[in-house]
Image (cartoon, rainbow, N blue to C red; front, side, top):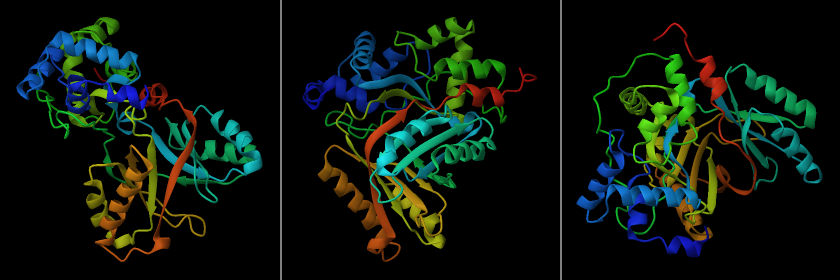
Length: 358
């Protein structure tokens, strides 16, 4: 979808995209309930219309999928961010070697004078991270720098459009049956099967939960209750439409990195995370002599100017806590997507499944 096509999205399309990037109801007749909420906000629609719009937006690539955004860390295993240097004359060769590892989920070329390749390693067994990185170093002859997440302050990649419900503040996640957290750190076999069934998205049908239940041979009420419980437990970050931010015009993303004084990270983190355009915000380790930054904040914009303005707002927020110097921060713009397969959950879910639990 081009920028011109995005501008052709009508008022109801925009309301749907803004309102339900989270908070979509996990209950019977979910599209009807969602349509009622939009109509109550002055956006007239019905369940059948909303379903057809969701299907069309999905088919046109405006959505990456419709369904549950799973928090892989809560399902089991671990993931880590890794940086490395790939010499210009060998860049494609190094990228091919890195991407050949099935544990590498995402890989980006980013603008930096030294660390120009950034990728995510996802594994079921945390000890495997060192093995994968050792193999990559042996194959490429280049050192890797592991940057695991120490603290997460925000992960909420929502992309709003001009139009109704610009704050995206409709939340129908309370609808449906009452649920209680399980208190378990592991999955049951049935829960594992459900995670794998929904990781790529829900069927775009009038009752997706009925369709998922039919696929699994499960009780639809159990499917609805379990997805709702996963949402409350954090295994699912949110349920709704997951937009393709490039299709919505958010083509500029900047990974800002900061050398925040250790004693200020706890204060700076929530302040930066409160900025609505910051989609990811973490504390990560430094690497002496190579990487002086301990704080990451990802921003997205619809133009280079908007992106740079948002980065400046992050800097101004930082400056409220200490005198930020030019060498205290940097922005690494992505220049090329080298690999993007998504986090493979099957092995991680399998490793965190207890056969003895019902």
